[in-house]
Structures are given as structure tokens and as C-alpha cells.
Image (tube, rainbow over all chains, first blue to last red):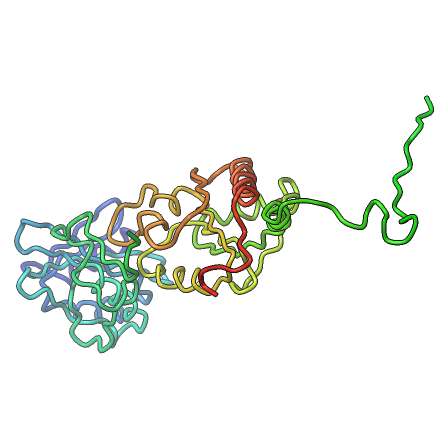
Length: 156
Length: 173
């Protein structure tokens, strides 16, 4: 899996990019403006043709608060890669990957449910795991741990 | 050793004065006896406890011995609601609707610790026990409960049915 690291480091150069190897997996840190271009490059030049998942990390109280994490896989050279970008609390928005990977739509919905990350270009960010009317984003660190939002009134 | 048995006069002798023409009992005892051996469960199965539910309802443990084996997949035909597994707030309206659709008399069993109290899920998603939403007759804790615990729960429910009153006319009529 490390075979792809050398070409990656040549292609994705500092200061915008930081390419490292963590537990045998290439990890790319990048600014959120470069996300869509970088993923297109990974897909076209490095054959990362399978979108695995997108999730987020809430680093409260650190700023920028959110880290959005992407995983990709290649069905030709069987390598994996992780992309990390950060977004601030005030505007937690990144570009959607739906133009590149159709499957990204559902995973971005889940990430939007749980962390409130906005995905520019994803037209359908309705709740997928939560229900309509749920207030807040339950996996954020400032969501109260015991807060319930029942749909059926409790018995007395 | 030869036994001398007393013949039971099944045939009525002398018109309608035979031994088996009538018997005396209490209405509640008779109806309770009939109801406790004809529990038709509705399996509201949501999570991993389903595996234990399958084990307890199939041959080695066999809830059919207690008359509670034939699952009805319409709540209108069922009288025992078995809530097997975690119930989330998103599912709670479905559970409530199923309970409302069941005809009287109806009983509810909370199968497993999640249905009993929420178990180890205490977060934004899980209902902290189905008794927050619907009344529960018998709780079977365990993660998952042993089949013996489920059978014990069914037997305790049978005792409860046998002991309770069975009005012909309920307040809902």
C-alpha cells in the first residue's frame, strides 16, 4: 500500500498538502477548498475508484473545530487512502463529492445528521438515520448526553 | 397387579341427568384458563435478541408447550406483544401503533434488557424501556435472556392471566 506514497508526495506537494504514512495507510491533510480537485485527481490518476465513507471528528474546543475524514479504496491496486480536512465552527461546509461518486450522497446525509457538516452541491440532505424534526446533531460534543427527543408522549 | 377402575358414567343414564351434562366453575377461572393457554404472540423484533427469540420458539425449548408458539404477524390477531430488542425513538411511533391495533385482551412482554430499561444504551436514540410508551406485563431482562428466563416469563404471565379478572364487557365497549 505504501507503493503509492512516493508518487502521491510528488503530486501533492506542500505547503497545501501534508502526506504521511500512518499504520501503512497514506494520509493526506489538505485545505477544504482543494478537496474536490484533489479527489478528482485521486480518482483519475491514482485509480481510487471506490468511495468508502465520510465522517467527521468534533475537536471541541479546538479551532478549527471539525475535521472531515474521507476514505477511498482502489479496486485495481487494492490500496486505501485517507483524506483529512478541517472546517470551522462558524461555517462547517465542504464541497459534496456527489459529482464524482454517486454513493457519496447517502454517506454525506449521515454525516450531516450526526455532525451538522454541510455539503455544498448535495441537493438531498434530509435526515437519513434521524427523524424529521430532530433538533441538533447528536454526535457533536456539545449535544447533551441525556437529551431525548421522543416522538411518542411518555406515559405518566 | 390388576387394577379395578371405577367406570366414569360418560353416557347419560336416564335422559339428561348424566354426570357430564354440566360442571361448576367460576367464569374468571374458566376464561383465564382458556386464555392463558392460547397466547398468540406478535413478535416485534428489532435487534439481536431475535436470535434468542428464534431459539426459544423452536424445538429444543419450544414455547408451543405453553400455547405461545404460533406467531401472528398481524397485531389484530395477536394478544401477546413480545417486544424483542432495542426500541429507538424513531421506531417508537410504530410500536405504539402496533399496540393500539391489538384487540383486548392484550399483554406485553419486554424481552431483553433493552426493551426492559434501555439497557446499556442511554443516548439520543434509545427509548429507556418500552414502559415509557406502553404498559408492560412481564419483564425478561438479560442480554440476551436465557430461554429458561423467557419460559419463566411466559409462565408468570400465564399465572397473572389465570389470577386476573376477565370481564365480558370492558369499559371500552
